[in-house]
Amino acid sequence: MRPGVIGAALVAALAGLTATSVGPVGAAVPSAQTGTRAARHSPGARHGASTLRVLLTAAPATRYLVFVGATGTGQSYGLYRSVPGTTARTTLLAPGGPRGVTDPPAVDPTGKWIAYSFADATGTGVAITSISGLHTYVVVHRPASEPMVVAPTWSPDGKTLVVERYNDSRSVAVGLAILRPVKGAILKPIKGTSGLTYPKFLPKSSTALVARRPKDGATVVVTTAGKVTLVGKYGAVGFAVSPNAKLLAYTDTTGNLWVRPWRAKGTARKLAHRGLAEFPVFSRNGATIYFDSPASGGLPTDIFSVNVAGKTLVREQVTPALEEWGPAVSA
Image 1 (cartoon, one colour):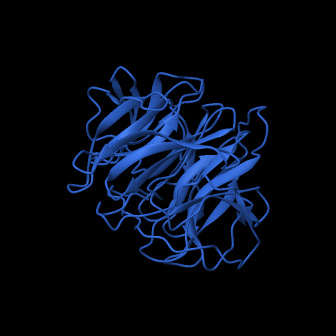
Image 2 (cartoon, one colour):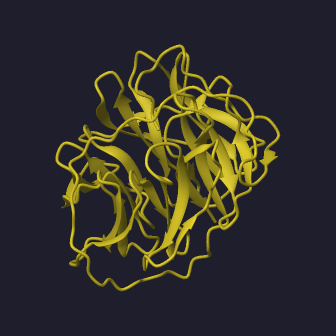
């Protein structure tokens, strides 16, 4: 997650190395890292449970999970890849180098490219790496004197990234910006988006995103032209819209994972309470929700999955020495 303070001590590792396979539970992860996870500030909300019809798409299941990882408290983060249902993982961005991942990654619609935000000794930026971890380039880098560039999300056509600009010293979301996924890209601020955080493109729309408004716990839809529409005040901290745009999965400040109809009448249903559950994301076919949570209170966190009926909870990554969070999925 984005660090609490940007400074010269912020370091992590840049992939450009051959991806290294790391074994199953308990296997060692090379090198140490530096950086911390920031707290989320949003009023929590509890909702009554109800029956909710499961609506799935015909999309394929998830091929890979991509997630952030660290080997110790207060250290910077690397990037890993795994296959759902297995605990073996591959290192894409090794820890201990000049850059550290600050927020959950995003996989492009083809499943071939991963965008992630990073911090280094001189500022923040966005980089893109291949799903193999063999090819990496920096899209944009801004100095530490400017707002952080964090939380990238891909448009469904794969032509655009939208990022959040975040004032780390004041813990304030400055606004969203459009970023073309090419080297040396220029940030184009989206007017009217001050205070919005963690944007995610809506399925099948390259102009509309869902975002969080921390000041009142609101979930909103915002367009790339800057039009903001309230969806509801669920106290959502992390959220995801299903591939068929029928369901909204979200976590609250009490650590619950919920699912409810997206922009339709209906009641939220609690799927899991793991304590500090964060960053839900749907599988490509919409049948499963992945999220991170401590296994039993406090750090380190692990990656979990649960089906949308809430009946099967799986601990996807079970490595005692590795903190794992911020899952993303690929086709």
